[in-house]
Image 1: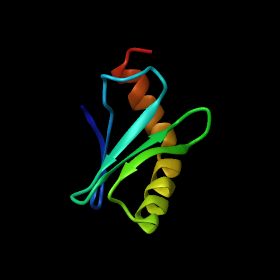
Image 2: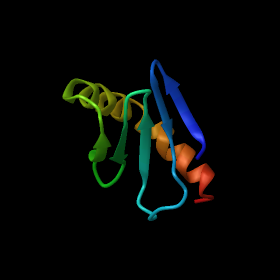
Image 3: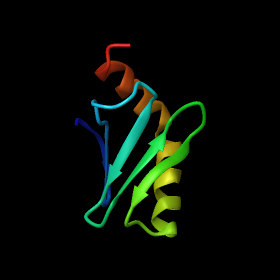
Image 4: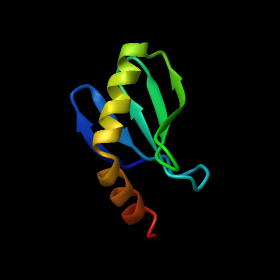
Length: 78
């Protein structure tokens, strides 16, 4: 599960053992989240994170979408 980006308390990474749809995982010391990157950025799942944290994470995913897609393509040889 390669780390793509570290921003404050958030670690952004991929999980290679799932479906092919582009997604990014986010982990903190308190919980986790999964966001789809396509066709639109959207929350797929989360555990033990507040609404405030989820909004902050979504904003970071939106701001770094191109970097995540580039890292995805490089990691999965697409």
